[in-house]
Length: 416
Image (tube, rainbow, N blue to C red; front, side, top):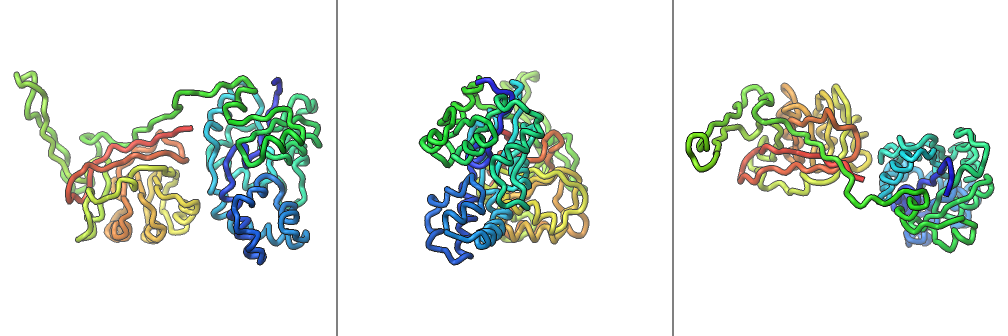
């Protein structure tokens, strides 16, 4: 298929957003005293894609005024929680990268409010693939899909409508494209069906992301496309916290001296280099590193870049999306207020680049707040080469019974 510009819908096409949308619709219907309509989340998937105002009127029989109130209730939950109950479809990041490399102009045309579209794309690091991103105008609740598409085409400066195609998962996308003078390719992996897309006039329907890519000459990558970041310090050259022992090494066996192998004696403190703190470090009677559940040290995490004093409000903002593992990039000073927010949120792990999570007289207080609720503290990270965003973290301690801390060699994995 020969096109110059590819316009993507967001929900159901780039990201699987159904959970956040349906739960937020459920919340709104219950507040509107329509709880019986909200019992089946699967049935609420009809809200994924079309403009909310119209869909509330169709689904619940609301007047326009009632539907506007329902939309308001919907956003009470969605803007705080629902927007992050979402994830890109497998292979989407690779597809967008390859399409951009092939020279296509990529754009997003969504019925979701413009500000929310940008939040989602930024959260999943997709925004840089697109030349134009447009959502609906929140001050124009009856704005149609065709009107959003028209704004995208105007910004792309495309006058020939045959040079662009819309890509979406619902008949609303096909209809909106037709009203704007475009063809539409449907995707059946989203929240619509092949039947509804074909009936509305989609020129093609892709069952998978890989099949969608094949329509534009992009082949599915079979190899895993990821990058590993080593975020630990070299042990013997790294700075030591004032007063702590410096790590030392000495040969025990050496081949050059006639021994059968090389074997080294290491003498060090449990908090040298990049390391993690066990609850026992500042809380007498608590467990050592061997008692830390490994799932706290392994899993998805978020890297945030910030410098200076970290307040409680700062930390609330960082954790608002439900983050369970947080790494702070930059020279920071964590306040007790920020530590209490972390403790109350019961996250798994907090990581910093400094050798200790607290400084001066606040250091014991911050450690006690965090370790008393068994938040893992990861200290001495090296995040210079890591951009802010979402990663997979592996930072397991050594299996040392009863120890208050352990060196680690943490890595971050960035994968599509």
